Amino acid sequence: MALGLYREAISDYNVATPLTLFTLMRWMDIQLRAPHFEAAAAINITNADVLRAMIANGIPPEWVDHAYTFGVVYLEMHFFEANASIDHYCDIDDEQHRQLDRYGEPPAIPQWDS
Image 1 (cartoon, rainbow, N blue to C red):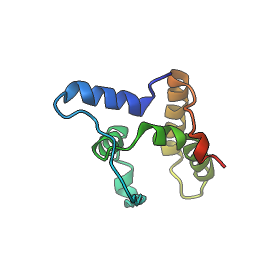
Image 2: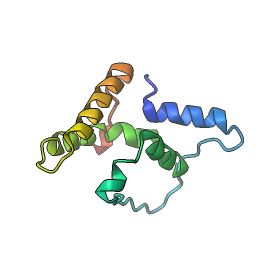
Image 3: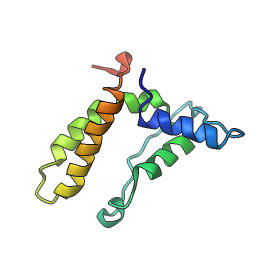
Image 4: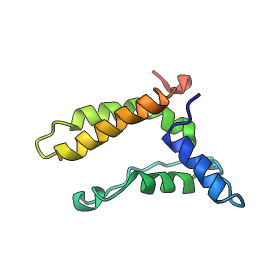
């Protein structure tokens, strides 16, 4: 199985911090909220910023794999909005293709599909 960008970041984190290895979140009742950023700030958020936040919060890699399809649909829905930054979405689309070439399409969680 291919590592994937998030799984690779977890491996890198574990090598860099062997005394505080990545730990999956423990939960009973979870509330996930979408982050909200001003447009000017959002453009400055990097993959590394997002990966660090996900690792710090113990987000399971399987969740990221499963969210792949949502990400594709979201990108396609917003790619041609009148106020969208076409250059920004082109960069995201190009990065998506590079990741698919490198890692392949990630698996979904069958119990979550409907």
